[in-house]
Amino acid sequence: MALFNNSYIITARVSPTSTYYANIAPLPNNELWFYTAQGQYVPEATNYTPVSPASQSPPQAFLDLLTVDLDTAVANGSPQLTVIIHGLGTLFADAVTEMTALGNGLQQYASYGGLVISFDWPSYGELDSSIYYSSSPYSFPPTKTSGTVRDNINGTVGAFRNLITMLQQIQHSLPVQINFVCHSEGNYMMMLGMAAETSSRQPVLNQALLVAADINNGALQQSGSLADTGQGLPISNLLKRLTIYYSKNDDVLPYSQSLLKEYHNPSYPNRMGLGGPYSYNTGALPANTWGVDCSEVISDVVIKNVPQVPPGTSSHSAYFYVPQVLTDWAATLTGADEGKVANRVSNPAAEDQQAFVMRYVQPPVAGLAR
Image 1: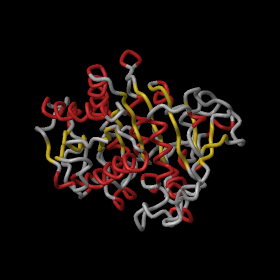
Image 2: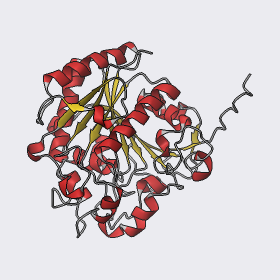
Image 3: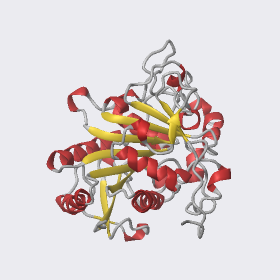
Image 4: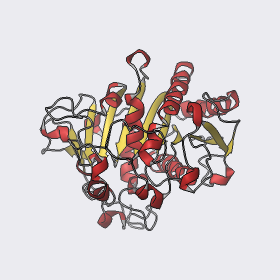
């Protein structure tokens, strides 16, 4: 499989290298920085440099580099551009690390030949993210555009729409499909960003994977008597297929669900990445939306025995390192039928029959394979 010439991260941070929360905010005027590093999935953030000053649209030099690597993806047999949106407590350097893990993991363990890049919204570090999570009272969308995590996300919506414009232009000029992989609070960025899209400018997206989603479990509820329903429906409306990956063994989302409850949708206070979508109980999930219960695979008991998972990794983030999960993601991104992905079985607990359970498969023991 051919390697890519460069690594790419697009960020909406006013000062990408800043780690102090007071210096972290969205760029003004919906602008973006377009960073590259020479070499495939470079893990060191210091190797990334902006192609030009921040702007609302990508510089031609950035597009030229990206086009060459997308041609490589086509040659690899995976004509795809997959954009990862990180979660909470992620600084610019952390976003680079996560993108590197995903790109290398999909390539090494799942033979995925598409190109992975990162969209970096202005999250704070872990401690500051817990302190400055959101403004009160709850509202969707938030009323402010900077100051807390969710305010910063709201202030990034315009820049996100400029990202979508860039992706549309790439899709129109090259034979590639556009995917998103959203992790944790990155799902809120996707939800808010897609909610701002208009029917007259619908992006034609391929697949979106909502992983360990820190959004309300009613976000994809099509109808109901409760208020604030279906906040994430624009995501499913604007792509071919949406797949939700969740685990009851997630070790981070319980804190979001309980300690940060006052900042969440009061009608649907539970986290989608912990228990899956509420719609399973009502049969009101969009037809192109599926859930995968990863509880058998994503748990502290299992991941401590998976050598690819770095020591100290939470189950909330372990998805990016488990080869079995990466294999499922690669099959999904490349359009495999949802009922024919390896190691999935139908979830009998789901009334809408749009849910699967990922069965754990014991990896072969080194030295015993024949």
